[in-house]
Image 1 (cartoon, rainbow, N blue to C red):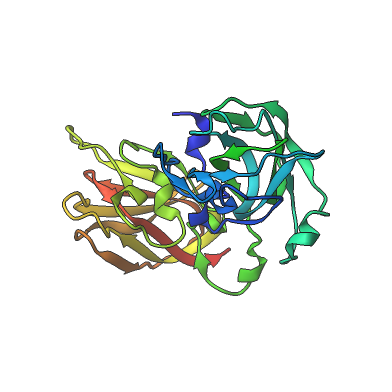
Image 2 (cartoon, rainbow, N blue to C red; image 1 turned 90 degrees about the vertical axis):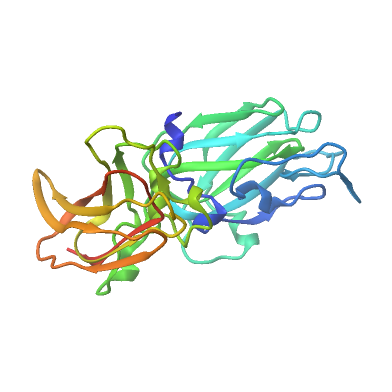
Length: 314
């Protein structure tokens, strides 16, 4: 597994991302850039504008300049990797691409975004057709938007922006929040097994549509159990746990245990508690001590759709 796949896609539509502007989308809609899943393709499928592609495609540019698309990140944060995927574009991909990023406050209209203080995070780089291009990004700056520049025109199937969420938590002052949520800055930092699906799925926004959008382990053949560790959005007291096994009908865990971690100190939050298949469970916790991580042990194996840890920042 490449390092970038261990971090959430900050731009993904399912994480709240949106393509807010583009210079052109004559052949393929800009929204395709952040669509979940691998791009699809069926040869010989023609519409009124030619072969149908699952991606963003601009017209052939006959003058100077280049095409671009601006994405508002669903999860503002620190960008570690950018993936520019030209899947299925073989005779119509851009020969070069570059990526810029900006931190923008509020909700400005698209024409104002073009004048934002953009900085280059991926310099102009050559592309190949029908290929994934993975670019490492250095730095610790927080960004809210990215701009994909293609030179001069062509088609891009997907843009992935992997990193760590850094939301503005000031809006939650005095209120409770989901301390585990990706959108609030939570992150799965360790996991015993991710055979079928990524562990960060369990703290993703919204409800899963199927098993693949949760976390599921391989079948254990020993006496151990599977687990994951969630770094919370901030040090806080967890008072309600939601352990959701929706869609896990024949492969839900038999039980779950929750343990808070605060440095080297362990804080019991929930003893081993039975779980039902295909059920959202809610457990009130008697949490008096703040923690910064929570370990979720499932017994012995199986899958979880979502984990929500509601509480207050300390």
